Image 1 (cartoon, rainbow, N blue to C red):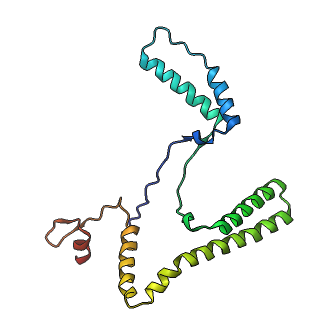
Image 2: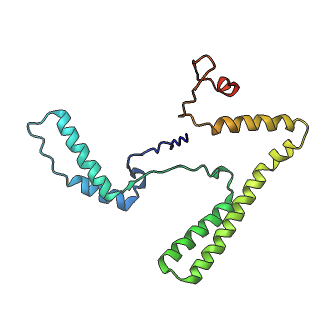
Length: 182
């Protein structure tokens, strides 16, 4: 019997882009929020607050926009120096021009910039990991290999899984070591 369990997909709520308040958007939002007419006569404080909150969030969605969220990928950007950031900035600008013009020349220039950016990121990663590789070549580094393997295996484990197996006496085994020994 084959049992295939799909991992649960997380559904993130829409997030208002409050941090994108540059001067023009802020003035638009301020004028739109100032034009909100609220009828609070005869309502409780909670009802008034709820109507004000919905009105402000509605205008913020219209003026500022909404982010859908998504999967965050750790790109390890902390080791990117100025050359890597410059090449990525150039690649992004060339991509935007290619999207506007749709010309083959712009696409070719974007492709070359993309290759250069990949090489720059790979160089930065190599330079960052070079001391670790040098340390692994030493006799003390052989012990470090097993420590790294253990930490990577532990980090790769799915924390939402429920690993349980029936033992030889019919009891459920939950411990990973006991499951492996069975």
